[in-house]
Each structure stands twice: as C-alpha cells, then as structure tokens.
Image (cartoon, rainbow, N blue to C red; front, side, top):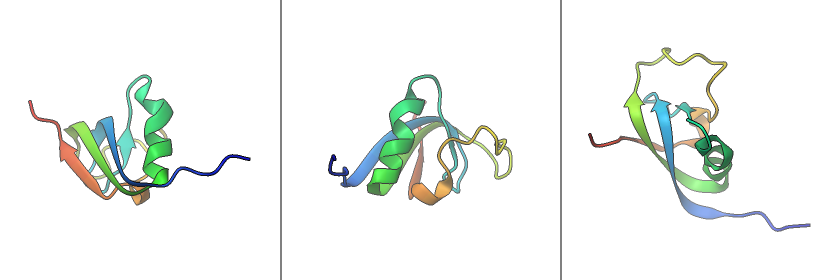
Length: 76
C-alpha cells in the first residue's frame, strides 16, 4: 500500500477555464493535472483562455472548480 502524496501547492496548466476554476485540458495534460489538483492544498491553474461562466460544457470539464483556488491567464 502506497502513502498518498500531499502537496502544499500544485501548479497545473489547462487549455480553458472559467473564473470558478472549472478546467478543460488538452492532450496529455489530462493525465496528471486533475490528480495533482486533488492532492494539493492550494491549486494554481494557468489557462490559455478564460471563458465566461456557463460556457464550458459540463460533459467536458475534467477538473471541477472545487479543487482549484487560483486561475491565472497565460501571458500572450
């Protein structure tokens, strides 16, 4: 039996997100982003595009906003 990972901070990158922290990933970022968001006390998500609330289809949201504390827009 393995011990769980506990992190103070998780820095993850997502393709799209809203201000509540709901995230959609692209390609292989979908593998570890959600797991690390759940394992950390504070999750900071860097997103390529911030969309309006309700614009993300609930069926494609991979990480719900409950696990994300900060959303930062990627610098162009």
